[in-house]
Image 1 (cartoon, rainbow, N blue to C red):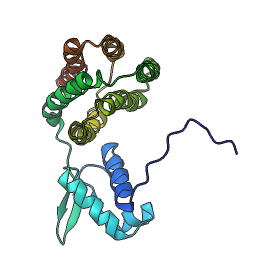
Image 2: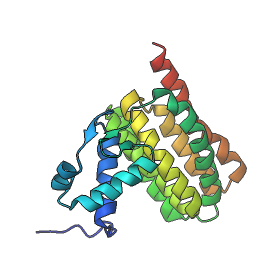
Image 3: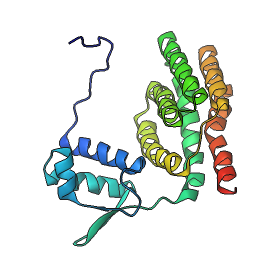
Amino acid sequence: MPIPANHATPVRQTAKENAFTQIQQWIIDGTLQPGEKLNDTDLAKALGVSRTPIRESLQMLEMRGFVKMYPGKATQVTEVEKDAILELLPPLAALQALSAELAISHITEETLEKLEQINERFANAIYSENYYASLKIDEEFHKIIVDTANNSYIHSIISSLQAHVRRQFFHNSIILTEKSVAEHNTIIQLMREGKTDAIAPIMKENWLRAIEEFRAIRDK
């Protein structure tokens, strides 16, 4: 069969890392509902691994606030505190803005062109009202900028915050809008021009506007 030549080389992960990634995704997208009790035997069977990596991944998920473990009793998915998004987005916006500033000194034309292509896909997803796809593509856009900033500490913190924000977007039904498409274009242009001082406010606004949209949905 024909195999695509332009695919990314998969990163080899341990059984624990694979289990952690999959269970976290199930919690984020609601496959595993808030308050649901988790059975490590069932999870091990579903993921084709032993119970040990499942237990280790659940411990990691507890540290990140996605599950609560009650020794000898049960492990449950944590509830979604909807107003938590008001606390999550400001630090994430600040770190994303810093990433954009740092990325400017490392940016290449190839990366800028890739961001433009991603933003075109993002726009198409929004115009077709495919909001699930638009959320995933938006993450892809910002991840490239964070990766380009090349700061492992920022990357680690953003990764943790982003997972919680993603869960909030799913459960609060926050919709990304056409304004984000225009802001992405501005961010790309400012990076191309090397305008470090101008890019931070645009990047912050790109993230903080979701707070206004959340409040509008909540207060209906």
